[in-house]
Length: 143
Length: 143
Image (tube, rainbow over all chains, first blue to last red; front, side):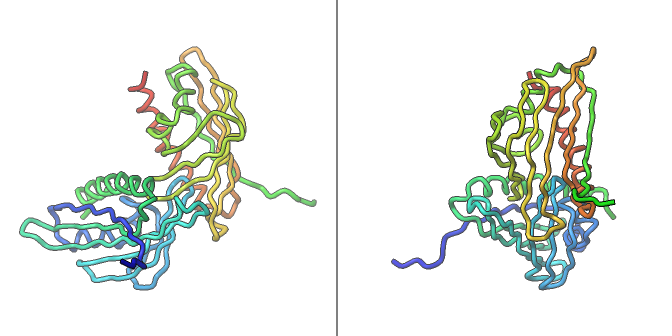
């Protein structure tokens, strides 16, 4: 068997949220709201827009918007450049919103972790738990 | 007037903590404790040791221990390499512990922000508030 594409791993987080997709979409796409649950940013919901996500401690992610379907799907690159291959990350984050009888099913997939990037992969698991906890709090108090 | 050295800015945070320096020193120098209040790491309290601080979202800081005086002073570089000069950070973090009648005066200075790095500087202010809040919680529950 010939394998030309390298296997990569994804982190997937899914949540049932008791708010409509339109409200969640605002939290995913408005910079001042993104900052409250994720990171400081210069996001715009425009395909091809390059932006950064900035951690408080000086670290920066390089991102580019790949796909925008209002209230349904948002996808962007989530890249971190580093000389050490263990930390050099090229990944894609995709949010999918599906309306349910009670609100919205929100799915987040971050794909692109190489099998040897165990630390980054494990860290992303922990990180998204925190980000989604922040998002829950934001949605509970936001209009 | 000729100025050859570039001016840099520092973030300084000071706290009065009701625990002795020895307990705070452990939180500053033991990797599993550092992880609880700051970030994942491979720190060792040895001058010249290179280590990384790893954010959950895949970002990494490159660090090197500069000075270790047990229970009194700890200093290390806190660098972030980025092609964009606005984000490229070369800084030094220094913790100073002074015993007081009631516990310890803890001072943290992060120096090296260039005047134009307003975002990184402002972010560090916010970041250290969070880190020190985490440290307070850790100290309250740790032996």
